[in-house]
Image (cartoon, rainbow, N blue to C red):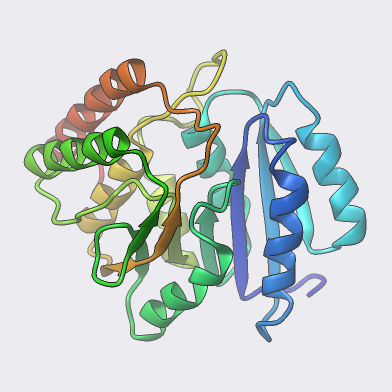
Amino acid sequence: MAGGRPFLSVVIPAYNEAQRLPNTLPQVVSFLSTQGYTYEVLVVDDGSTDATPEIVRCEAERYPRLCLLQVPHRGKAYAVRAGILAARGERILMSDADLAAPIGQATELMKCLDEGYDIAIGSREAPGARRYGEPGYRHLMGRVFNLMVRTITRNPYQDTQCGFKLFRGEAARDIFRRLRLYTENARSITGPMVTGLDVEVLQVARRRGYRAQEVGVEWHYRKGSKVRPLLDSYRMFKDVVQVRLNDIRGRYS
């Protein structure tokens, strides 16, 4: 793969994930190494204050196709964007560090792109989806948020927020270059920050004419979530409104 483009890039944003990554990274590499295509795994360290970067460097000595990208702590949206734009793959998968959607589910998303779609959206609501261990209040929050997103943005997707999406590489790079909310001008922050990144990504994709399909996935609730219900709900509401305004003003064309 040296000097060439891998078939698949896996982008994993990580903020203070020292506890999870020693389990996550071997699982990801073990799966990918059996798939018969070239790959790279890019962990984007979002300014962690724990041993996250040291762990990734250590794992990279064992797994040569694993890379570390360090960025200032500006939140998950900024980190994901940086990782997508740095990824070299013909296809790019974004996955959360907790593997709430197990890495093996990538096979189902791959089928979607094989059928001609540009984006496969891992979905906890599409046919075939299964949820495990999710508290009732979290499910309710998700459904209320999705109703708000569909009402404001007029997008048709039943689940925008699952952090497991596969893109055709060229489409991903085009979409993420056009994002407006959390880009190079994003401010440094303290603590975790959940945002409307996925909503903006899918809104840009629709405006650009890319074909996207929701794919039901297996999803496991993980303890230690960085979601703060009240603060994050307020921020995400503002993000969704801004995405709609940006779209109306033609800023995603």
